[in-house]
Image (cartoon, rainbow, N blue to C red; front, side):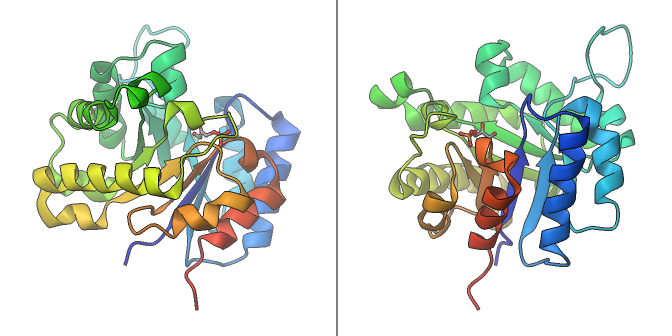
Length: 253
Ligand code: 13P
């Protein structure tokens, strides 16, 4: 009942020509396929060019980050209104690289989420525990905290504009994906936490898995009842790998 959603986070990779080519190849090969939702998240400078490439295709566009204000003296930051103006429908907030490499707090992430929704964007909110937290048995405590803080002030009516991405920090870029059972456990926990807050609307909430997703491991992850798609890093930079992941998310016919 939940359409699977596969997103490619290009991180700080590609250049203008490569970004256009990659987006064009993904969109071209996907054709009019609508049984799975697909989005790409290029670096900021390439958003307008990729928006142009994707115009009229089924592939959606998003930014990897945004600031929490509409405009002002915030040198180097990008407002979610600018992201929308550049042709994006989506933005990622709370990615673990933002949390851990740039020190973003749950408070800031919540403010970004509010601003992005106000700007009319749909938001992928990323959450995930570190290796140390998992080893100490704190996974659910961390996920619960990140979810509760991330969603402060968010009403149930906004839930259709929100996607969660469970990305265990130890699985990102390491080649060490979570097992399907670990992913299912975390996703079921997040859904039940969302249910306690938003009721049955949480049944329609898309929860993606991210962390070393590849064509070889995606099917067993997507087979889990609460895994509704994938947020793909490295493998999204090669059209054939990304498309193989997208195909694995198609409903069985
Ligand atoms: P990798 O797929 O490269 O592990 O990255 C995952 C990720 O961080 C997606 O946002």
